[in-house]
Amino acid sequence: MIFYFSGTGNTRWAATQIAEAVGDELLFIPELISKGSYEFSLQPGERIGFCFPTHGWQVPGIVRGFIRKLRINGLEPDTFCWSLTTCGDNVGETMTILNKDLAANDHLKTNGKPLQATAVFSVVMPETYVCLPFMYTDTEEREQEKISAAKAQLPHIADCIREKRTGVEELVKGSTPRLYSYVIGGYFNKRMIHDRKFTVDREKCIECGKCAKVCPVENIKGTPPEWIHNERCTCCMACYHYCPTHAINYGKTTRKRGQYFFNRRGDQR
Image (cartoon, rainbow, N blue to C red; front, side):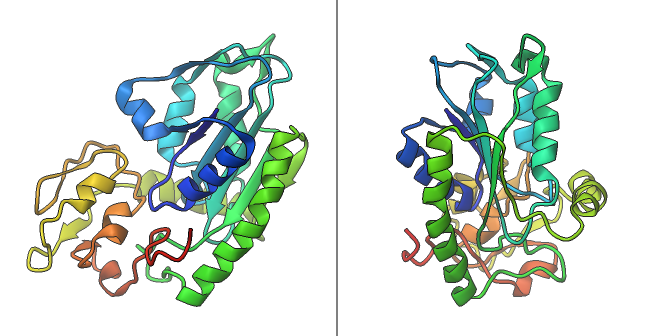
């Protein structure tokens, strides 16, 4: 089984490619949370995978919260666990944080041995976070370069997973991964993941309801949209990127930023 989270489609695409290649079931974490589904049963020899975008050089809060409540029956000491994270540039110590979260859940231990992702991968994909002054979407050319590279990388990752190779670490961690994840990322994920800065330009809004449909945590209602402030916002920026008229913004910074979601132009399948 593959547990995944995705906002603008990068991770969904990557996870789908892997699932189809290895024949494993895809499970969307926000849907599981909304149903209160945290307990699962493994078949003998079944693999466990986690796929998610890197958020501020860390595992997204929604994924970390899910892992804290996760219960898996049928775990064995040699159960193969792997993880893939998508990123716009690098991932820092994201996978170290994932394994610490897995180890902290006593319900994921077998004979005292914690479940650990022993094959970990990062896949560089087009940028989606544009809420800071120095962050932009990629050019169309750069988008295509990243996606082409990912298409070439994924079959190898699928082979590693199918063959249950352990001790695999194929990560773009960056020059100072601990600084990225524990200092900058720690501040970012604690202070900057919220929905309070989202606004809608009512003159541009066509009341299509797209933003509410694509929000993975059901944090938007009505047209024009209103944010519920249910404290579940992940700042995945799906509402911003999918808006067909660029009516949604996050503060003032995004007013002159581009938009991106996977296969937006229909040429990235």
